[in-house]
Amino acid sequence: METGKTSKYLKYAIGEIVLVMIGILLALQVNTWNTNRELKKEELNVMKSLHQEFFENLNRFDPVYKFHLNRKKTIETLMLSKLTELSLDSLKNLNRVVGNNYTFDPFQGIYNSIINSGKIELISNDTLKIKISKFQDLLNDYKEEETSTMVFVQNNLYPYELDDLKMSFNIAHQIKESTAQEKAELKQSLIKLMQSDKFENLMVFVYGHMTDIFTEGPILREEMVSIINVLESEIETHN
Image 1 (cartoon, rainbow, N blue to C red):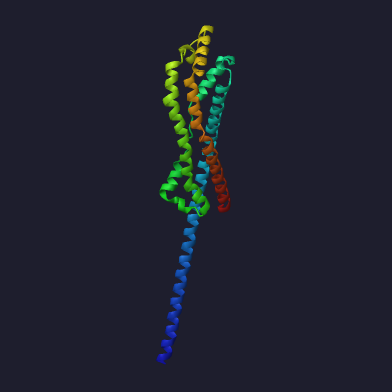
Image 2 (cartoon, rainbow, N blue to C red):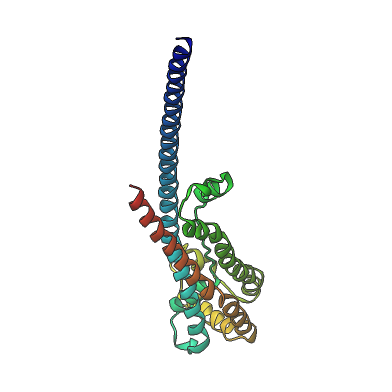
């Protein structure tokens, strides 16, 4: 009798243990499912934020790159045109475009936050993760070329024009209607400056400094478009 009761109690105890274990496993399963759901939700938020920032930066990049193309074309015009046949307004505009500096300054608050916080690891698509991680290197390569050109212009073209270009304060700031003599003097001064050997040398160097902008720029833009497209695909999959 005692043996029979012991056997019965053991079976009952084992059953209880099995039920408890099943309960624990189910609780762990639910907890894991909830955790994964929260991680997926956070991953989606990260990708949406990155998509918005990259999209805005693409729109900021295009006018900057267009400016560089325009300056390249302007230098070619200056070097190949008969300057005496151009109007004063045309000469002023050509000189302004050559001397202006315009650089790509993207928003990177979200990008830097995600990289520095380690949230980049939330992205499950390894290809996308690698592309985002390597983007900063492409950006730095491009910005180095812009900075190199800007510094050369500031250090060389600006001082030369300050010393050799006779600029009318009235014409420069349009205080009042310019006289025909003022316009004629400025035109002659611009032509003399632009026909000088030093100005041509400066244009050769500016043009040379810009060369890599047109190599690195398309690579950077293509990568931004690629990242945007992959982000859109992943966001659509996660929704």
